[in-house]
Image 1 (cartoon, one colour):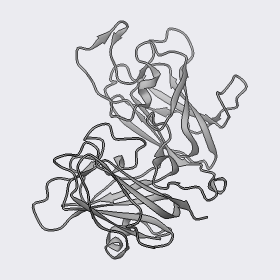
Image 2 (image 1 turned 120 degrees about the vertical axis):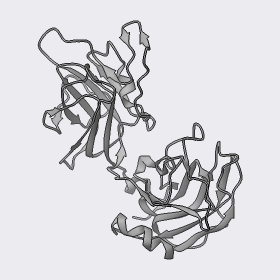
Image 3 (image 1 turned 180 degrees about the vertical axis):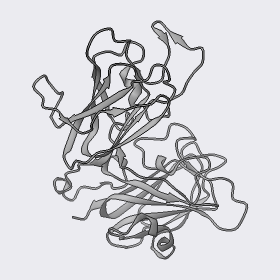
Length: 328
């Protein structure tokens, strides 16, 4: 089985699932602004219309008949430093926004008329039915962004990748999920993701169905499957939670966890090194469609930054939580 990896640009701070909100748009006549923040990929449904016209999976304004441009203000799920913006116009062909520019601000509450906005991109030319990635060269922390489109049209999805700004010093000795997406935890690589993405493992909340977890294909040879995860902050782990929600005839039969205090080692080197990481959780039995908590079974390993979760021999896991205290 080939190893799978995915470029990690950061947490999608504009994720509806994490709590981002489309606060205001000057126009969303054809398709509401809230659809633009959905985590699912946009879809096209032929023949589907609503009272205003063709149903589109995104944000779409009416045809502008005067000077000006349209815009939408988004409150990020958590404030953070932005690395990259994705503007997705999939399925918008003759009705996509031809150009866009993004501004950002940091404020408490809702931006007002006196809020100062900072341009974080130049004006970007867009194409229809395409995905445009834009690098952001800024180290500032922002809480809101404003997407300006010129002059009008549609955007299927807006994703704002970055690093959440967490006040770790203010958390003290508080225990929390150090793997949570909202604190910067993320999947690095897995040997297989045939039926479900490794990036589902640290999503907030319970899984919504069997497709909302990590699932490998049926193994027909010796061995086991695995995934490597990075904590949002170096810390000491007190509890591991493995949830197999919705996985009934295809759950992982058992798991073990190896860990490392890997510092700033390149992600590309971790898979080979992980074979020799120390053990945090010895091989433990799992059951179907249930949450498993491991505390007493955990070994003393000290502070860590990464986990390698091994499943035997294959199958699916919905969520993984790594509860512990950050080590500052």
